[in-house]
Image 1 (cartoon, rainbow, N blue to C red):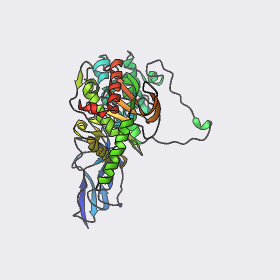
Image 2: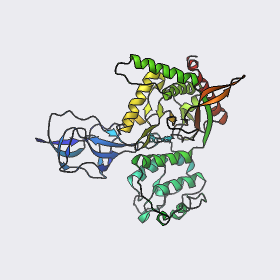
Image 3: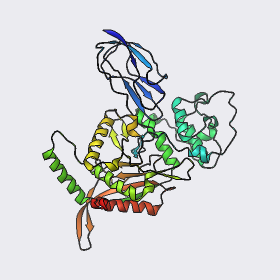
Length: 452
């Protein structure tokens, strides 16, 4: 047995992160790679693992502390001083942006109904740069606004100066609702709302939110939201409020594509040697979507901070909503245009497994240029996915069903897959949205079009 110090490993690009949860205590016997603490950045929550097994002798951090790579976490009475160090910290719940995938949505993330999306580092500060009129900040007596770290991060994402927000919480504490109400009031052309105004609908002349004692109607149970939902919820709300969503609904005939998918999986099953990767419909949709994004580049763009120029992206990083026990997360497949169908399917399977196990890294949920939220394995006919800012569009997929389709002479049974494309109407008009889904449907009906 020997005493050793356990420090924060490489956590990527984050300079400092806040400790939000202690997962062990002095006297606990832990294993190598067991999670010790949970930290939160402005994009994701991460669990920091132990590099060795042993007994916890002393914790060197507490909830609320700021730590970075190399910070001392604890003193451990190691069972094996030669144990292999654990890998870098893995993220648990999602990003701030998912996503949207109400998708999502990450955070993600996000999503759209996936939404759980992580909020991108370059979140558009439209509120501060365009919508908020220059005003003189109120006197604060030299004190900082009364708000928690998570509220401060939320306000930075929206570009809101907390000095201008009046808190409605205990002792003037600023809440998520206060920041959201302020943004709504500014977008409506009003000044910063006071606490009383926020309680009445944020200056939008809305009725106050109902506050009822539900227990008087019957038995109730209080169920706290998961950390993913707490992180992705404000981002989904921001995306919905700040972007004019339009959703184009369409169907794609995937009869031949589904038959080809089944035949290919049968061939792979016979020739596979330890490789259990199966081609999924989503992998084909990703490939077809890339062809549509190349034909209509506005869908693979973002508005700049002033909302006056489009940033057209020359890369194709595709986010997809992954269902996990804690909520939807949005992993991102980088350079999807350079990968084949089988490689896309394999990478999706690996990222989905990491999402379910809470092992996604923040980098795995960042950089998406377009997001797809698929509910085909569950059911439904259509839905309205929420765009994962700063992206400008998101594609939703529902369960494909056999329908009678007129071929000019008679009705034929065809497998039709519903598509729901939500887009930012500031960037994309209705005609372009319809053309995108029509072309995407043509590609899915005959993938040979991607060769042209």
